[in-house]
Image (cartoon, rainbow over all chains, first blue to last red; front, side):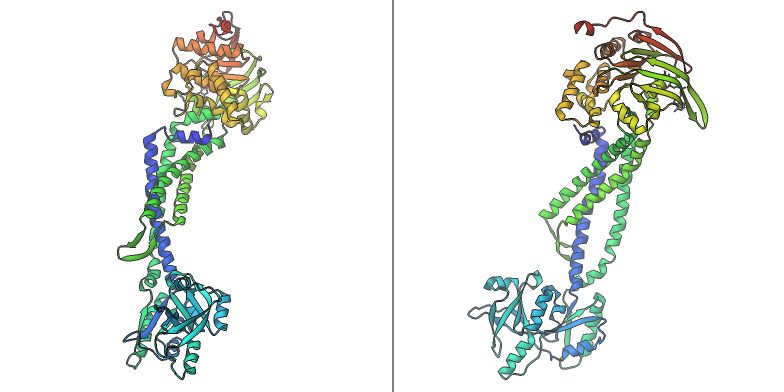
Length: 389
Length: 242
Ligand SMILES: Nc1ncnc2c1ncn2[C@@H]1O[C@H](COP(=O)(O)OP(=O)(O)OP(=O)(O)O)[C@@H](O)[C@H]1O
Ligand SMILES: [Mg+2]
């Protein structure tokens, strides 16, 4: 027999009371796991949206119509100090395919200087960035085509364009992109494309799309408005679109949700603590003489203190596990993909939520047990024993 | 384990209620030899429980000194007293205060949780203590499955499982009928004569007191008189059997 066994058995003294207190822990903890998971999930979405605050600027009519290369300068001219925009990157469809295959790759010739800044989700390391800037034939390939064609970093690969003038270009792979959103793309340098076209006597440096990387969701909105206004009533009217409208808006909305949740969580925690403290106080009062006998047997006051705290934390832990485990299991089996009209990348149980909820429960158990334990500590054996029977 | 003697010299004890002094013991002197069995009688409020608590180190005297075996209690800290008590003193109370959710054996094992001891040694000690009080066959019963007399025997087993030299009993038969009281008193007699425990027992019942070797009378905080027990009842079987 161990002391923790004694603690467990003590919870059976008044089973109904223990069950009710346990439930008082279990319910909020179940909600906590779900709520914390949700917040963690939303924060992750928000963070990735915040990282990639991008506007796609293309020709107003269709995306296949191209815009002059100078469009980039004009967009940059809207915010010369770069207070709202961080970088602009022009791209041109190449429509390349691997020789002797049918499927074209989403292959894009991109501005050299701003590619890395605008497409941070490509995930280039500083060394890879250097390689991109140094090697004229550098290409950055998504995981899916790389696996399909067995390409590795360092390989030389050739793409044939399916649009005039049907260039065939050779590249060297400097990076395989693993990020899910980039897994299908093939990027290479636009200066390489322009020079190669010059060699066959074609002067064409127009772009199909300009990616505008913004600083904040607010900037993204104002730039979207300003850019389209700038090119209105010109031959090259533009349409600017938010790459991830929801994600960007969300970063702002997020500001309020967690603070509301925090306030609710604090209230719930206090209520649970009061319930648990009440349970422990009654339990200690009923057992005053028994605890006095423990002292007479040779249990030191501090050990009695630990026993009461231990019991309180045991209640908390059992309650937390009862709340957390089924909720976590349910969320794992049925991950929530959308919440009303809000799509979620995925609402899965986050380990932070599980550890956090159990941690909160234990903390509450500790706080709730403290005062009753202190009462037990101060219990004067002699007095407690005298007023018996 | 060798028996311990008890010596109190000039012990004073006062309680304070709202800064008002309530004197309970006034310069009490008492000697109890090793292996003695002393009954203490006296009117309610005369300070019997107070004295018992002082000897067991549950409370400290206002003045005077108390020695139990080698231990000088008034020199010890509360922490040291607690540790000392767990090894050297067994308390028995009128109400048994067993833990209702533990079995008899587990209740008896409680004091051993304070010691580093292999599980097998623990089990052996619990079995021994339960068989001394005649409850080996009730080891797995919970307190509510036992009679009052059996509960008190479990409490006695709990008091002796650490093999203390001194047993302090505060009206151990106060809540029991005559037959059950007799069982408990025979048990205390056995612990005294066979195991050499020094026993101090508070009682209101002259019949219970008649089991002791010596009876002391406490009144208004002083020892009124001491008598050798002229009619110490013969042990009802335990001794004859051994
Ligand atoms: N904490 C306390 N504060 C004030 N007075 C106390 C306190 N504890 C005990 N007393 C008083 O000390 C006196 C002795 O009490 P004690 O319990 O030792 O008597 P007793 O002889 O054991 O009586 P009984 O036979 O009823 O058990 C009583 O008058 C009691 O009221
Ligand atoms: Mg008393």
